[in-house]
Image (cartoon, rainbow, N blue to C red; front, side, top):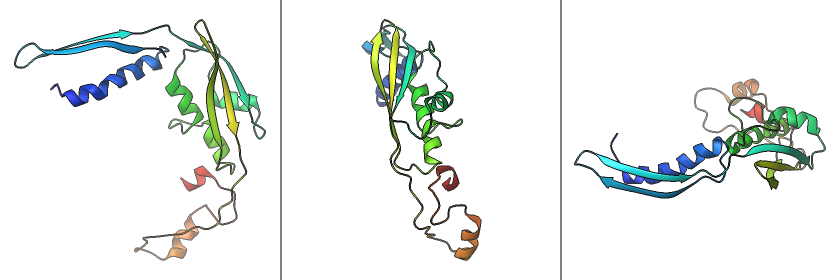
Length: 176
């Protein structure tokens, strides 16, 4: 394809992210250069320091009172010894497009102010221990449902079809 310098610069972090997905959390580009070989060709040299490949070891949950660590581990579905992948960890904690995640478990139960932070507590040789720090907060209820921009039908027709009602617990999946 055509060499576009701005796209090349934005693609370099994507290379590192791909290495991170394979467990190389310390990967970095130590050198890169581009040179014109001919009028139609460019040579790109990239030197990458991979570092060591890392693995998940122990995962501990802190601050969870609503759901047990066993339930959260089942949803997280990351086994001890699995190759470290921050992208997978993040998607299984927050807004997984392919299924259930820890965040949706809480958000569907009214915990609108829920937060989870994955903290690396120990790195030993090629293994990483994590502590999942949870803030559950209070359950939230729907106060009001407002319909704006409706020109096709009456508002009461829309209200009849939606699942979210004032006074009910907040539920992310109902709103979606």
